[in-house]
Length: 77
Image 1 (cartoon, rainbow, N blue to C red):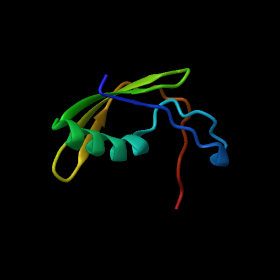
Image 2: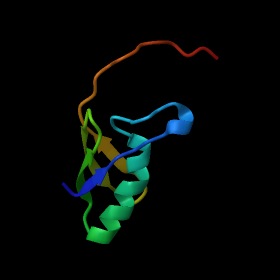
Image 3: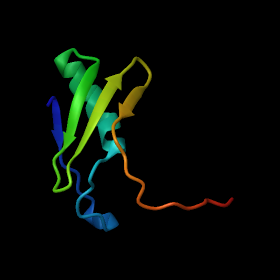
Image 4: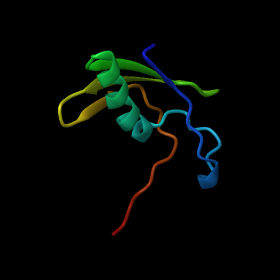
């Protein structure tokens, strides 16, 4: 593993996030720059755990991994 991260947001009612893509959008490029790499494997260190592949490009980051649908809904505007 190149990047291991726990994420906690108790103020938002989230005691432990299983995988946090938004956090890895910041952590990924930072770590990639430090290591001189464009592709990283990330592990969210929580009780459920979660694995991500991060590809850091010049102006974007691609995050991929497996997902499970837990809720479906519709947003109305």
